[in-house]
Image (cartoon, rainbow, N blue to C red; front, side):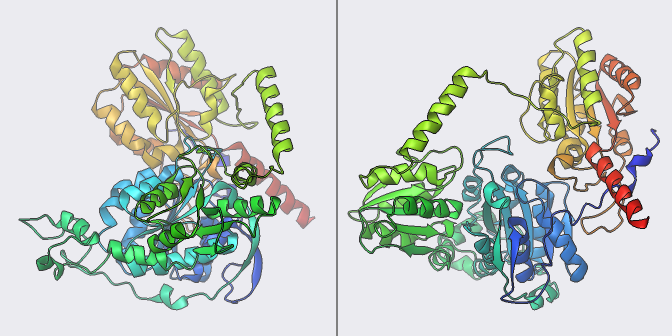
Length: 619
């Protein structure tokens, strides 16, 4: 077993409090502070009396845990954790909510598919006080897919709220807990990347200490308890009855055996009663914009550029899935023409179009379906203003600047070769292992295929390393490599980081061993979730989110019982040993694992600077 290097010390970095601005635990209603979006989310949860919080890191919501881990030092009832993956995070929050305590889990948009199984299986059982904050990424600047998680929420029939300002972020998170308890369902709060990286003035509300201090209570009742398979048998299954109850279709004979909620009627009533829905502008107008979230702020700016605030009505929705039916129907009957402005998919637009079929004489609806608003990218005032100008039959104030901008882009596209690239940070411990593995693969017979994964190792696909040939999603590198090997292309390499291995790579490795794949797995162990901000994980730091000592799992000791055919641990900076390990691993028929160890260079550099600052202070 490789001896731990001295730079693997637990004192490398304090993983908490890196991005926390101010004291979020002050119970001073009316006090204002400049907060980040992550702090606003944290403050909203604190005000709601949240007791259990779980998260797997991902932009733009990673640093909510930094703020709440500090709050957990002040409020002893609070539990805050970095979970091994998003499914774990949701199930931890779900269990806490089943114990009648307010709970929250957080993830980025591509983390939502990980929770679909437990989410869809628990959305109808009647659990309340459970909030899911998910970060969406219009334009996919920090994500491998421009995925609108609202479609997944619709699949599970779980409501979605969308705040606009940072004040609304804080207030809406607090409101989401009350809403969840009222309708007895989990509730999503959607924030986007541009919101996630913004700052703004936020006025604090009161902290509900009593909610946080409520003693947990668990109801052990199969029929009215927390089972997705309630004890109701033939002639109808209990699972189907939960869904029938939600849509008001359950036979009366069974209703007394079931919880009263959730019901679709209750959700729709809550949607119409949401205090964050707002209709503004003239009572009669040729155009009404229906919008939500950050797009509503951009809409306001577009109207200001056109000096059309008094000519165009705006229905800003806080409750977007489902849209408030009565409010939307009244609006559809009131105006002549509608423009639906939202980011990514046409989730609001499709619901509005469906409701329009029930409104006699409803006006024309424009949006993504009519190609007036794009599906991809952030929807800014530069996108919205020309559309509204055209609908109002007036010149766009941005026409000249947009024309110049497009001309510049066309010139760049035609004159500059399209180039994809990226590079490791200076001194990165992942540089040598990925470069040497590519050299070894190139010297061996066969295709020399390597499959990549999420994490810092993602950049190994680019020159000059040019190691990986596929990238799908978190944990898929080894799964894809296993499939290629079974297709008959020889021994295939896969690359993943330590955090990804604990996230779900361990299951992929078990599958490869069980099904006798011919693969080599390189695990880049840099002792943190480096790409998302150096958060701890089960194999790093030996600290929980609240900085309490815990067990630090050894990758080598975890993998040994899986009975791989070859296992080697190598110093990430030892080129000769790296080459030897890769050559020997590729020569083995079966599953080979090479773990390269070296702490992230940014962590080491941060430690060096902290030591220097400390020594200067003592002089």
